[in-house]
Amino acid sequence: MALFFTYVIAGLAIAMPVGAITVEMIKQGLKNGFMHGWAVGLGGMTIDFVLIAALYLGLASILQLPFIQIPMWLIGAVFLFLIGYESIKNADNDITLAGEKPAKSIRSSYRNGFLVAISPGNVVFWLSVFGAVLSNTYNPEQPSNFLLIAAGILTGILLHDIGLLAIVATTRKVMNRAMIKGFSIIAGIVLIGFSGYFVYEFFKVITDRI
Image: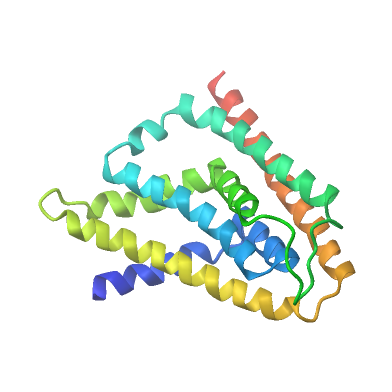
């Protein structure tokens, strides 16, 4: 249990930095409520789970190959740009104030979280920073330790998401439509900024290899 709780804390630490997933979670949480924000987080955690499974099965080395990673930067940039553009374009749409029933489906919020999590920033982080930790803890004779650590990490991320969205849900009660619209526009700009960074990284990697 000590091992499990150690990596719960590690999962919390991993989830703390503000990234594209966090921005999208807060935006959906403000516009449509707790469940929509959490759906974004679950979409992101789906990719986290897939990457953990890939590490467990020894597929991390394939995902780290240059000809796999290079197009991922561009694909991630396209996904983030489209989500950011949609956030700005529809900033005044699908806003439900506290007590109102959301018109947007939870599935679409989950999809957004899934697409944002596919971005190379998330994948590279998992493989380079945390992949090393998981890989070093894997012992073929004691696979349960790896699974316990992975469960601890995912639990930590889940606790972060629930805590963040609880704050968002409370804040949402005192926000009006104009304030939520303004945050949606800011969130869209931030997501497009992440997209621009990925395009920069794409061309940087290409240039370094020429």
